[in-house]
Length: 427
Image (cartoon, rainbow, N blue to C red):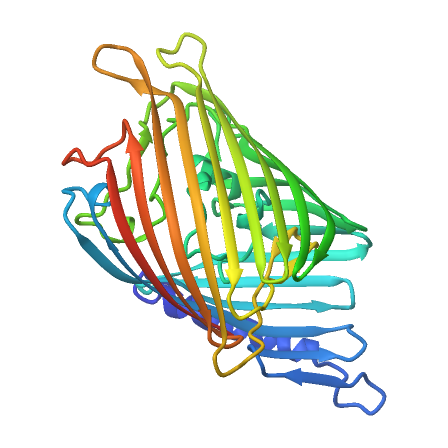
């Protein structure tokens, strides 16, 4: 059978459906005999079936995130106002466990052009408690906000500091292995990811190495004190060292005609040969109030004899959030991350206010016309409101304003504004 581009999306969707049926059938084995384990079925928030002795489980869920962005200034090529409506994510998720200790997770993401892509396909073994071993395709572990699901971050898009080194969290369509564990107030992980189609001249695969450690003396909803440290390094050669950022508005790249994704350090092919990053994270939550901050530094080493200097990227953010209706943000020490807000009143839902400040600097970003090196900078303020109508529906609105230094669009704009809206359905 030949799978053409035209039917690729349908093929992947059919494969996901068949996979779901097979795993579902396996998970319920024994339920038709009188001495087998009883099965519990839940339909709130997706479909879930599990044996009461927790030997097998199966959950089918997903998310839909429909976005609209309005932006101008540096966010567009000509500085004039533009807008874009698009599906940020449309994901089908399948997860569960088998024989008590084996776990699996599959996430299939559907694009607007009809194609689909495995966002995650992993198998984990949790029998060596408190250690878990995971293999397959999954996001590397680096940073608090990236660890938190896109469903439950307080702003529509994550902080621009992750644009400084997008590879630290990118599976790059490859395969990886990760060891993680939670003991008392500690969580830690160590992983290796092998990117697809990224070999050196000798055919050896270039890998990404990630480490993350978290200590949380207080680790429950409405009572959080969290500190973390991350480190990542990749083995690569002759990479271009380019750094770009959407500055918090995804629509700038969804709009292929007039959207602008500013460049903070231009492409210099073959001039760099070492790349590493480390990050600090802290968070505090008391009842409906939460505060969090992250710092990321990326070091890009120039080759010996290169015309370029080493590039240093520094980014940090500070975020404050408050739930007007009194609910607390959820928190999970396993994974070191914030979780959802559960509305206590299903009629009015939960209302959350959020403010975030992002700062990004690239030192010795590039050469000017006179041959001197210069730095680039950007500051982004984000003010937002989230309405958790119920456990499944979330409506978000963000206003962003940005000011940059030594970074501009074709019309020489170095500032701009954006408005982002999202309607999210989680099942």
